[in-house]
Length: 402
Ligand SMILES: NC(=O)c1ccc[n+]([C@@H]2O[C@H](COP(=O)([O-])OP(=O)(O)OC[C@H]3O[C@@H](n4cnc5c(N)ncnc54)[C@H](O)[C@@H]3O)[C@@H](O)[C@H]2O)c1
Ligand SMILES: [Zn+2]
Ligand SMILES: [Zn+2]
Image 1 (cartoon, rainbow, N blue to C red):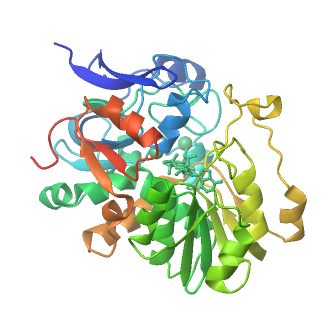
Image 2: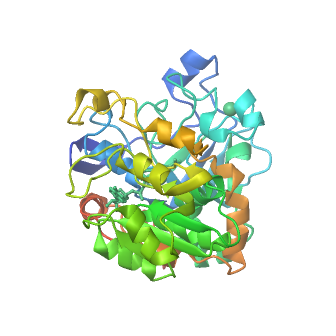
């Protein structure tokens, strides 16, 4: 009998659920050695996982479009119950149910002190910023599992105020670990406000969360673009307009049909580097160029969609090292502001939790949260890759609908 099980990347298109050791209160060797940290982690907790979601960011690895090695553990969208804590954890107790921001952050470095927890300087020797179960992110074990270790727990964890209420609203609260804050960050950095017109590229879970957030922020019109009709229908289900970017018409003309002019105030890229052109062909810079084209002069572009420094699967050699053909002169001429990078989840998760707990936000319905077991994860990855209009939530310990 193994003490823990986790979803593992097995090579392009394949994941499996494998046995793994029960987590210890220890940071990965590679982080401890390089960052001058002790391996023992009295600041950490062990969580029994309540819910953990599959993300488009995982798909980049599973499609073989990153440098993730076979054997990479997966899962960065984690909600769990504390079952063990280190001696230096002061304000979190065994039994607390908590949301885990996907960014791992020390709470002690210059960037953490400035609230920039997506680019913590102490948790990943390869670069600033880290996450559970992700390539080039310091070797922290993934949380599509039964149990996981969370370091710097006092800083990282968001404790839910009431256990019963948390379990009742778990399908909404599970989105606080990543996509709800990330979508909100996209809309917020695009400077969506009361009366804004907004274009959101991508109707995957992040795009839907960005569109939902734009409505929360008071947008007058939210237009969601994708090539996937089922996902566009999901966007219409909560009040968005939609455009199919696979059609012949120019995006600016499609926007003009909806808002009367060929531009919007704000735009969000919720697609990233695996973007498709009209015929479904690979076009990694197409969304970046489209959002510059359709956003008004003086507007802001929120870019949560992920871009990489290494894409072994890219068809062109420049794109293989993350160099894309962006029409930057256009954005410059229009004085656009660009906001990129990991979402600093802690900046938004508490406020969004309050909106959920007080019935102001129903994010699970907007993204069509769909519960599956840990053993069904391989099938969930396949269906999500095919474009299912669903956000898969794994239920590894039977907490959901128990
Ligand atoms: N910045 C962050 O902190 C952060 C956090 C989570 C996810 N992400 C990234 O956000 C992106 C979206 O995540 P997701 O889970 O929704 O992924 P997803 O793959 O489910 O959704 C992407 C959608 O984009 C659509 N698309 C492709 N080309 C398009 C185009 N030209 N115009 C419009 N739509 C197009 C696809 O059909 C798909 O529905 C991914 O790149 C993911 O890695 C970033
Ligand atoms: Zn994610
Ligand atoms: Zn830090």
